[in-house]
Image (tube, rainbow, N blue to C red; front, top):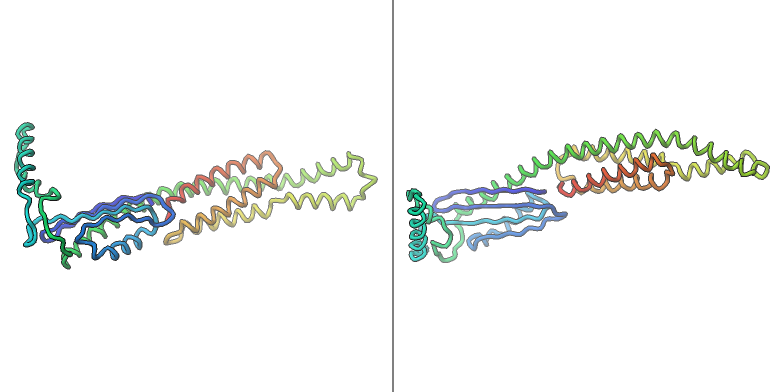
Length: 286
């Protein structure tokens, strides 16, 4: 949700500058700064920003500069002369051409003093156009960042699926290994006479079922497929992907808790690490 956009729109006697910056946030936290002339359309502006950006800590600033004197405007001559005097001195000392100096000074805020008034229809149109262009720039910035993140997440998903398949292979071998070890342990404990063959087999099956991770492996596979499918969906999917990532993490934790195997535990640790990387990336996804 990181992004930046700036746009300038000129109208008759008016220049509007819109600047928007967005950072990561679970909700929309909008800080809007407007000139007095635009207070009447603040609600419309907030609604447009909310609809376009959805989430993020957003700082939006809109500035209005008059390029021509209006009937209710007064030029601050004392301030204008002070600016010109200092700038001419600097130009002479640095051998800088003074062409266009007056036009440049007239762009400085505060030179034109006016009574507060609402924007007319043409001026409001220029303001909304500047806002729209700035929002489009932020969205374009977000889209480029999102494409890069999607590649990183896809790579991490492939790693998780590869490790899941490896866990599945190890789990199949582990089941037969545990069965043989349990049988040997019980028989060497001189329980052959105290326990018949059927009871021995029942105890082994009970233990194997208690430590079986096959269902967790299958659910993790389903969650990974669901995650990849959701990534290809249109519209905001960040929250949904976060929920699916939580389910993937739950299966990984259960596998780690039930599987008393060094190789599987090693894979579980690596899967947790990659899943955390995915969760960090999802903080920046709408």
